[in-house]
Image (cartoon, rainbow, N blue to C red):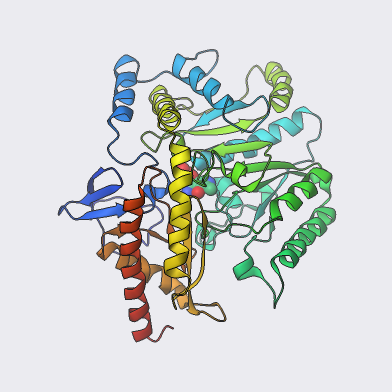
Length: 448
Ligand code: PMP
């Protein structure tokens, strides 16, 4: 094997799929076998695999000026244009944008930005961040500690204690309910738990709470009706900022511009990446409101610099990719299309899988969804060692569909936003074969 340390991979495993090229929603391996990219790569290739306009926009920028940094008084047109454009789109008041390269570094930036802001206003003790069980926010030191998935913490001595991160309940009714608790009772209980935690810690020690409007890597959890309304009221009451991690939900994924719109969240801060450039060039953004920015100016002037920045912050080719992506989203009404075909995908998924013996829950919004695979449909009992997710993923791949097993036994779907109804039908046809095949195999192995 090539001497590559593969990310988020079992380093003891030897099987590899070598992907060679792509077109539309399809990718092809080196033997020419076709696969539907049912997860848009890693929840990111919103405009599919062969968008010549995007490639041309990036190439044009690379020819003109392949690099220009944005430190210490230098700037360039693409970064300024991108910030101006995004300002018209985001639900954050008088927004300012810090650009980075990945969702992880965007979240690390915000972790530091909050410290910088609260130090600037003379409240250095307001520094703790609340995250949720099953949250995924990346893998860098701060973002990795905000993440709650076991594999991202194990063997890394994470979470890092000194980062002052608090963990609260995952808003997943299906796996988190107690006895015959209703959804409303479940919401009240976890909100009440959070309030107790806030009071025990002291609200004046807590800066913000980070939430994925709909989670991705932890199994596409769509919180119950009323959860965000109560959560926001609680956070506002205790003067705790709402930080929306839109790295997966942002830009049309959930059937609206942002996951915050779909879920009724009014964020103070946002982070996004992935679909900002349709993944054609790495770029992320950390968004703050104008009232925060204004307070950050004085300490920066005192030291002579706001001492945070990446070499590639606002990389011109990345900005060109993002600008063209946003132009295509608007011109081709991609969010409206995603809402329309997303509703169809949700309806079809439920029609096909609700009664399947291997499926405990079908969930999702817009063009993001998951099947919760269970060993017992009535009790919702889980399948040992995540064998459900891995088996469905393998059967899907054999049948020309790339999906992702997440959180052990959830099979996640998140196709490119350009997918058509006919392509959804074909994707779900292949998925049904995979789920049936996995069911037969798991039964034979005595795992159900
Ligand atoms: N936040 C969320 C919600 C994510 O899903 C991800 C990546 N899947 C990240 C942050 C980290 O992004 P990246 O992998 O670009 O660092």
